[in-house]
Amino acid sequence: MIQWEQQYELGIKSIDDQHKRLIEITSDLSLLLTNAVGGDDIYDQMVEIIQEITDYTIYHFKYEESLFDKIDFEYKVAHIKEHNDLIAEIESLDLRAVDEDQITYGKKILKFLITWVFKHISGSDFLYRDLMISNGIQ
Image (cartoon, rainbow, N blue to C red; front, side, top):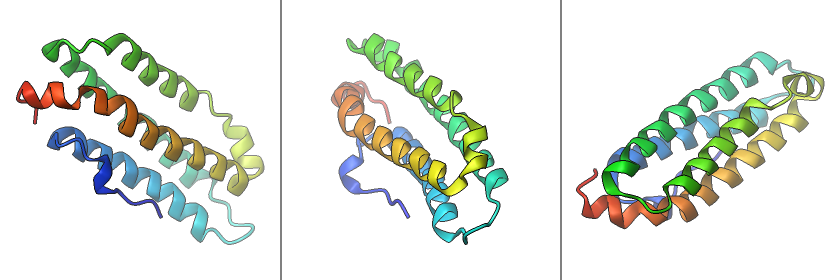
């Protein structure tokens, strides 16, 4: 199970709440993989969770990006590129490979998501934190 840690909080409630939701959805995938018994067919549940992660990630990124112009964020272009690269990576997942070896492929997806999300929050998102807070973004 993946849990939110206070060290990742930006101090911007709207964004922290969205980050927490992304972690919850990712944790759902972790729990599914952990609780799967050898031979269980979890393909449909995995695809559903991956779709939920994709949809919520797109929603979250659009929200963040809508704030960048309001705060004149100097790293906007690079940040949006990171967002677009992640969405492209998620959308390029080979779901046939998921079906062939659900647990192994699911764990690869999970590791990728955990690494990317926490690295992005603790790195790129912290670059805009002070600017958003000073502009009254909550």
